[in-house]
Image 1 (cartoon, one colour):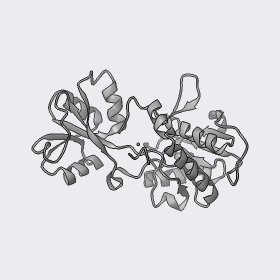
Image 2 (cartoon, one colour):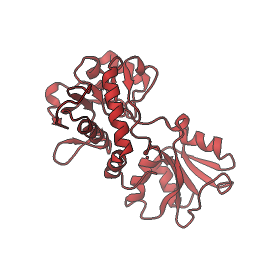
Image 3 (tube, helix red, strand yellow):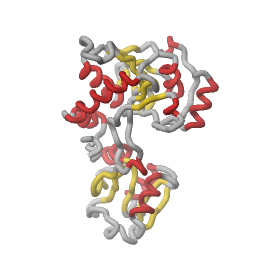
Image 4 (tube, helix red, strand yellow):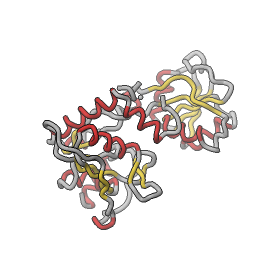
Length: 283
């Protein structure tokens, strides 16, 4: 793909917490329908061929820039705009509804929605209930270094250099396995890592490109640093990307979404959408 080059009542909520449902921490309680009145039209047009007559998407609203409510009170974000683009490409009407993240699976299981556009983790346990589309976004890992020390990172150039990583993270595992001569410097979170880098206490930071891009573009970095080298997308360490989730037996809908995503990738739409929500290219 270009970008690769670019969630029932309380018992199920507890079950999902045990599974590690996705990218967010699972919190909150069930909200009544009236608490989430927004149903936002996404696309219009006649159904085409074997495509579904419409798609009811569901998402959460608490993970910018992927899903959030904008200043006018409408749900938006990268995931939502991908859903919009799918519907436009399929020429069908769609809606997007907001639900708390732990309840997204329930809405599909109870046929209150057709597809989840919220980056739900693809795990063996959840595959008992959900089928997943092809990936539409892979977050790469990147090195961040201070100016002017922006030589391309390699096992040789980082030999005996300190590399900041979040303790116990997939990024720490990657540095251990592929940069064995580097000296990992662990921290409790990205904010601490970036502070260490800015103050010169580590030679580089290795972390996810999304958080790094926002830090680099913000006042905290103050122009001190930049991405260095290329992007790393090895699925064994960094996952195989965000996907749309549908009911496990809804093979026809999955096929339509897969086809739309492939064409949106091929014509550059997905890359263009990413540039709308991230301050710079992640790759």
